[in-house]
Image (cartoon, rainbow, N blue to C red; front, top):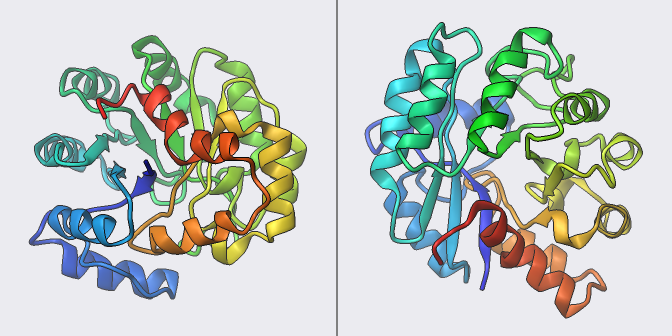
Length: 265
């Protein structure tokens, strides 16, 4: 079994515009049409059984619609995270609604939502996430949307993990996109932090990837692609070249995500 723990989809009518805009920002091609049905078809062609969709409220007023969409597309192999915006006055109430909707966690993107991950104004949100026992996925490390300012450096993510030990953090992109040395230094071994492998095949060396997995523990690493910006099959091929044991592969490919998120699969 394979579960891709980090993909993105959009409402059908918005997907073409969103992909075009994001592709220009990221200077990256995309590998499927950005819709829920397109994702299901792509995953099947890549040998992936299920995926966890990361939805992002990039403006305060988007919270309701983003989470409504996330709830509406769940099923048939797709499981969704909701999102809140730090500047929304009802962000904490919306976190409760995410829980009530049966979504599996919260996605926060410090670059697109314009906050520094250890800014104290986020602390009430982190406390609520902890109380609701919702895992939170952060984009971590460099991002092309804000190339000159890293909003979620590994050291700051580690600080948040220490301040909120009951909050389960999934640090996307192995704890820091293009900042893997910092991830090794500050996040490897953190008790309440999971790492996901999104975009690793084109950014992280095999040697460092193996070292990060072993130092952090394969039982706390989630297979992920960041599709549509990378193919699940390409990320799998990258991991298949590493000298991992079958136990480590099973943990990374599906067991950890299934256990952590309590997925009914």
